[in-house]
Length: 605
Image (cartoon, rainbow, N blue to C red; front, side, top):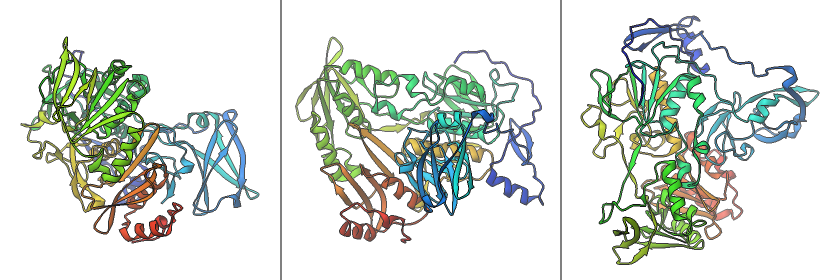
């Protein structure tokens, strides 16, 4: 981990925490119009802050010469609930008309650049058509994930029935806005053995927690530690784009962490947590005291336990180095993928262009069967087969054979022998929580950390988020679930940070995930475990379809290909608290061969 730490002298600090707009109102009302100070426990001393204390926001328009203003349409050109991309010389703007008011925002989702005009407008926000991120149309703020940044909001004025938009050239070109953040004003930062907030794990949950604390005005010390050699990166991209280099994967540049006082300890392994003394002990013996703790350790991939399991060139893809090595070894050679889940199938798809042969070995009859059902799984399998991928289903690996220590053959239980120069194993994962076993922090029988809706564990001041937790899923009757999705980890990291600041936030996001194979995307929203029927609209053979997964008379999840923005539409309906009934879907499929989904935005149940 590097660096020498000495115990600092106790220092009195004044910490300012800025409340978000919505909570500021509540705060002011609660004390007869005066902002009542709330105490926040930090490093053992009570810190006070006032609701009216704010960070100076940078002016949105740095200089008049940097601004453009233009008439973009007539007020009657847009109906209520409509969106349109308009050109402003230096870039496009998303113009939205909602409840008679016009709003102008950045037109691309900052996550992966999706055109928001093709998204879903509902309840004062626009939802991205690709991956479900939501932006408030009045502020441009990111309200649901994935991604880290918000949209620019531009000035709109109406003159002589024309709609004018004013925007800075810089904002038009940037297409993303990082929220204003506090900086760390703790003098002990960087060289002491105590921190206010310790975050174990630097995936989406850990990073979003740190960023949210800073966005909310928290200015004490934050330490983020990770087993990885790298600063936080976009792990879902690894299996979709195995050639990706670190600079293409990094979620934030190095300077970002320095500027906002978020300390990252790389290759740092926590081996025990002492909750009584609020201390984390690292593998090298270093001890770090904390006041608040977030556990976001993620999961560890399962490995093969067969004969020859230790031969060279067998990988579980966890790091950019793993992914890059797999591509190098597979080029013009034979690749075997074990496991036909998301990771395995994404890797297989990517390698078809590079490898001489790609084989997939899977215990089930069809890929994705438990998740997407038999029919969708079979349609995807056909797509792979037409791209030269060979499947060996309902079997598993019995032996890995080597020549000079390097993988040469994969032997199946069906006694089939596959030539293999490289093997990727994607057979699931287990929560990486072994270090918590003796800590007193509750774990369930499978090793997951149970949390409540506020992401709190059974120990006060200790929160958990991401792939290693089970939590109550609000719109499935608070059923305790584990949802190891990138988007969900973001949302949980944010809720944990808000509750470290005593804001009483609850997790309520609708799960959303995606996969990309052969330049085609499959999107999915909801929680489909235990579905008992699948209703398909569209054409599975053409891979242009939407599949509704139902349990009893209720739609519990949806998947689609080439049918945008249906998944974002369903996610928005579920997020609004409305139930979609099975009979609504059946009637729609019966009467609509055109793919009309207008019934979804009706009143329903």
